[in-house]
Image 1 (cartoon, rainbow, N blue to C red):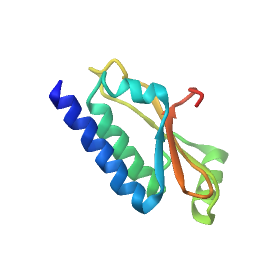
Image 2 (image 1 turned 135 degrees about the vertical axis):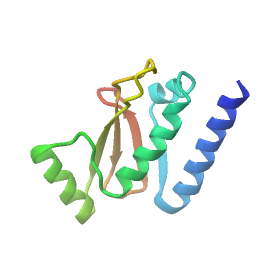
Image 3 (image 1 turned 120 degrees about the vertical axis):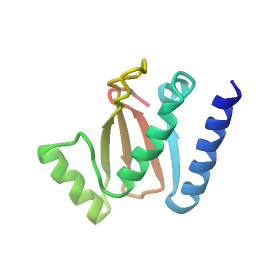
Length: 116
């Protein structure tokens, strides 16, 4: 149990450090609940945020990808989708959606199809 608390606190510390530079992050209720199911989800979210902030869009293709690229470059709303691929996890195959609005003040993190 203490390992999971340490991991959660380190993730919160990461969010606070990054949010001071890049705005804040908001996790959906379902993502927040799933953090206790799989500690690997923490590092996956952290890695996905970094990829998203560097303009990598994951499972976004075609015209939607072109739209996200343009929005990333010119300051519009863009999103990324990353698949959680840990085979031993009950969350295997879940698609994580990361959305940055044009203001870049808050980044939203949820599972694809989940409503905030």
